[in-house]
Length: 171
Image 1 (cartoon, rainbow, N blue to C red):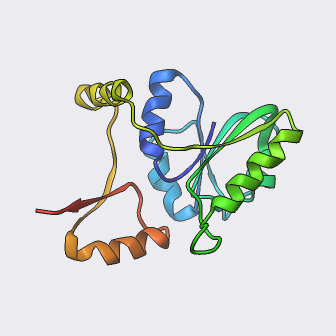
Image 2 (image 1 turned 90 degrees about the vertical axis):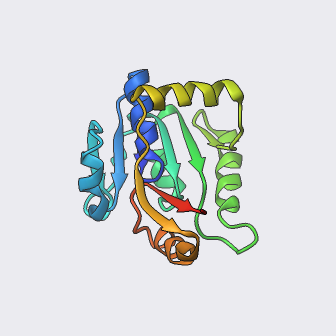
């Protein structure tokens, strides 16, 4: 499983619970922080390319900065690429074109490209809540900001400067 930085802390914790091996991919600036989450391997994409080995059964692309063709070369012949969120594109479509294009291209391949669509299921939320309360799942809060500081926090998120989640205090 290859995980670019984003919601990786939760995925790392779930990886430990489910027994997966994780290779985390991020900028050099975030690599040290990722090492603290104990993935099996950290790749700094600005120093070394993602291996085109075809060894990965699943890749979760959070943010959409790596070309789909690069990600597919890293996948096993029957691997699955899961696109979560996206960057770029027009202001209307954002990263949707990349996701739809990836899904269409998977029609002609044994590799699958899927788009993660968020849904809320009570039993899943209860399971995650149990993981959090038991200490098995520990969210990373990168920043805590007031409502007035939200524009600055959004700018930092867009520039990729935040590691973890941004918590907004609306009190």
